Image (cartoon, rainbow, N blue to C red):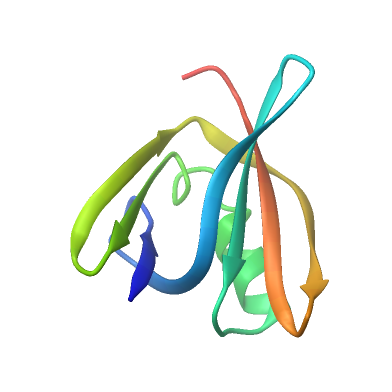
Length: 90
């Protein structure tokens, strides 16, 4: 199972997460297994909550993401909710 964990320790099952580079801007793309759009947008709009994010696969830490604090996009693709967070200086 893959998870994304927020700064306060909240965990969300995910399908995928990764960094996309758009020109000079880095964006973290996260596609979730479950949850409502409102719940996820609310949680990931909180700059303190997303100041540091950790991704896990099968219980092992894979990546740490710092400074992705600006929610720039959210929606649904193939029945799964996704969000994009823009990286800000940390």
